Amino acid sequence: MTTLCLAALQSAGTPRDVEANLAELDRAAAEAAADVLVTPELFVTGYDVGDLTGLAALDLTTRVSEIAARHGIAIVAGLPSPGPDGKVRNDAVFVDDTGQLLARYPKAHLYGDLDRRFHPGDQPPAQVTYRGVRFAVMICFDVEFPETVRTAALEGAEVVLVPTANMEPYAGVNEHLVWTRAWENQVFLAYVNRIGAEDATRYVGRSRVLGPDGRDLAQAGTGAELLRATIDTAEVARARSDFSYLASRRPPLYRLR
Amino acid sequence: MTTLCLAALQSAGTPRDVEANLAELDRAAAEAAADVLVTPELFVTGYDVGDLTGLAALDLTTRVSEIAARHGIAIVAGLPSPGPDGKVRNDAVFVDDTGQLLARYPKAHLYGDLDRRFHPGDQPPAQVTYRGVRFAVMICFDVEFPETVRTAALEGAEVVLVPTANMEPYAGVNEHLVWTRAWENQVFLAYVNRIGAEDATRYVGRSRVLGPDGRDLAQAGTGAELLRATIDTAEVARARSDFSYLASRRPPLYRLR
Image 1 (cartoon, rainbow over the protein chains, first blue to last red):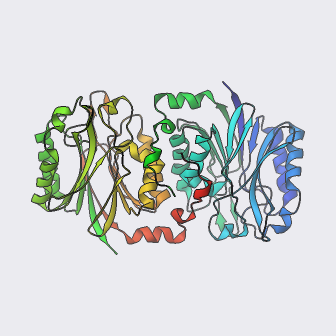
Image 2 (image 1 turned 30 degrees about the vertical axis):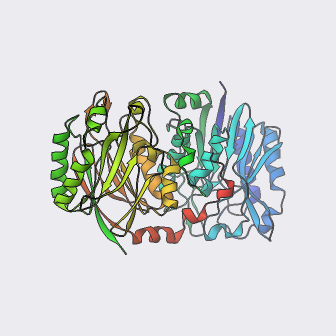
Image 3 (image 1 turned 120 degrees about the vertical axis):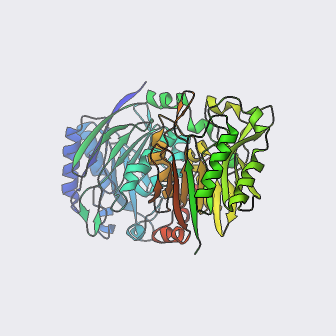
């Protein structure tokens, strides 16, 4: 049995103000009293804040690593990094409690006009084992494709971390879809959203941490909040002991190309 | 544009009383004023009613066909049929308004002890084009696997019909999962459930017909009800015009074996 505490920072951040966002992340890391702290998508810069080329050129990952090491907490943070074709990548980085970078995951499923700024990732969700727990990391629109979370679960993920920037009119994703992802894969899932507005985009908040039986372990409203949830990985096996969706699959019947 | 009226019979039926159930189906067919009438899983016999070998040996499909032809309405009905190994199959048949059998689909994903009576199907969801509309038919537990509905949608289904027998404590499937299936595939979906109890099984009712944008077109409570919904297949393209989940998939990143 492995038990671990997860914290989720639901916040509006400060559009394009990297120093303000890093200061907020530093405060959250100090207060979190958790093993892993997760931020929303592109928390370090803002999401619907125009061209990110200049901010992506800064060494934002190092700054996040410094905060992680300073407070002895692993951090999964959303930030941009330079990509090919003059576009940036929309990344989530996983740094451990010493500041070491364990994984960098670039968002693979890009959403509409807002994501045309980004060069898409070409890898499945990042898998990280930390403190004995198998994590998968994906970003926002990625989770809306059942294939993404299924791939992560089949490869052994116990906890799926999803920095997101989900907006009106898509609150059904928070209410129904992420529940379904946790349920149908019998995994923990943390969906960590932005709040407030950037440009014409109004975020819906309502971050959640769900258990592998679909129970809410923590749930936010539409305001700023630092959620906490205890992850006991024994619950994954417990959820699958009645019936296991993964074991009951019929792959020869699926035509998913 | 193709418009069609769908009716869904949410009912407890009468355990093991085929004549009573066929009489109820006959009444529903007379009242439905619809193009297609859908029943719950194993409506003709009952679901949690013990061994079905004897009842499966009766020619139940012909009886359903006679009802369809008599009232000039297509029927998608749940009934058992003889299978190999002394087990029966848990089928859904699709008969047209002349009583012709267009498809027979045996449940492929079997659920727990209750489904040990059945020989599993070995085919993807049945696809039927009727009155210009592409239907897929699957049964209960099948829909809980995202791969099943995705396969149907990728093969062109516009409307997914799901006779079911969903019980306590799984009402989250009705509330969240079937919404997610309609939403993530941008298809119509009818989830047609039993009510009441059979043996120790308490069904949750709450049948739904959802649009490809996740809107409820019809929704039942926990009592007997004949739901009706109008299906306008132009809504599928409309739902996909903002963004299309099917077109945004990244199959090279999925590892789904």
